[in-house]
Length: 166
Image (cartoon, rainbow, N blue to C red):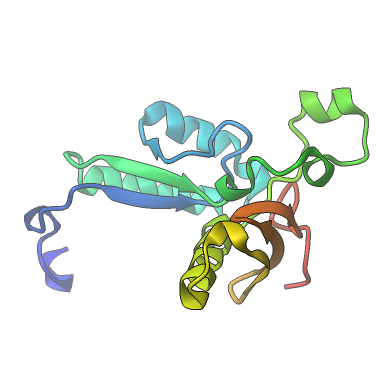
């Protein structure tokens, strides 16, 4: 890889971050990557078939190239993990929803969180004082309602396929 720039091993990297689209119900905090996590992310692939498999491959390659550096996964669904029940719950049988982990997960969370925080900074207002509608447009599209820095609704649901027409 040196022909493309500096030798990676000489850059003093402290960690490698990996964006993963779908973390399911279990993964919503930055998580240290290990073999077990990679296997679980692969199992989540049917929920984001265009996104999770390439992410898993990228993580595997990066771990081979940089084996001595911690690898951390962050999840696009994390920001929406604590959506209010009225927003996260589908109008289906609760037992089925629980058994199959069917809920509104939300996506583009890293973008929605960042934009909402930057709006507060730009306006010079505390994030907790703002009610926002945030749009993620480009490389996918989604909308969210954010109250006091916490998401209360989102246009994307169980998979990235639901929501605004892209």
